[in-house]
Image (cartoon, rainbow, N blue to C red; front, top):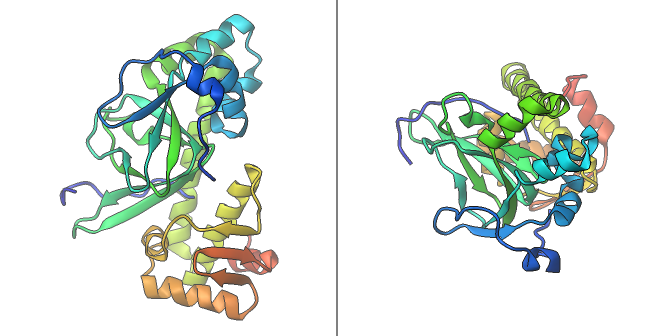
Length: 279
């Protein structure tokens, strides 16, 4: 990675699945991806099922489009791309072409700090969108890296933008998703600017469990896909500080910690630490 990238803070934070028989039988409809990408074409029937736990449902399923409009919208999501753990979905400086809906898996976004270290700017999970950082300059301003084997739906932005101008409800849903990213940015600024170490970690864990629960996963038992060092980078804390905070929560009966496996024993205690801050 280059050492002269801009610094910045962007967003707050599953099991991989195998392609279905419907996926395997579908005929290719998308242009060839860049070398090394593993792409699975999508049929309309499979798309509706795939988006039932994805932010993409906010762009299609609830907006009340007619069958004809729905067919046009479905053509946007022409392919899925599979990534191995540690593989980059896109990198800093890469030309922006598409948004990516995380179908399965977990990602981190990062930029390079002035001293050459990687600064984690966000964690994205199943059902969330990646790629908004590239809209303004038409080039990506960070790296997006898979934290586990993952799969994304590729949404060409130019086509999405053109279609949203025709369908007002689709445009409103797209704006809602973008607005949520801005609100999350504000949450990060508050997190880093006014909270002690334990409060930062509590807010992070509450945010993570809430997002998992909204997607049908357990809100109390989870496996951290990121390392403690990555959590520390995101929260502006040293690795030792993060480890001490986890140990303190365990000693006080707030969490049960077994390496990356966590169980929240006292959610109210975490909320009290955050002191009513919305996360």
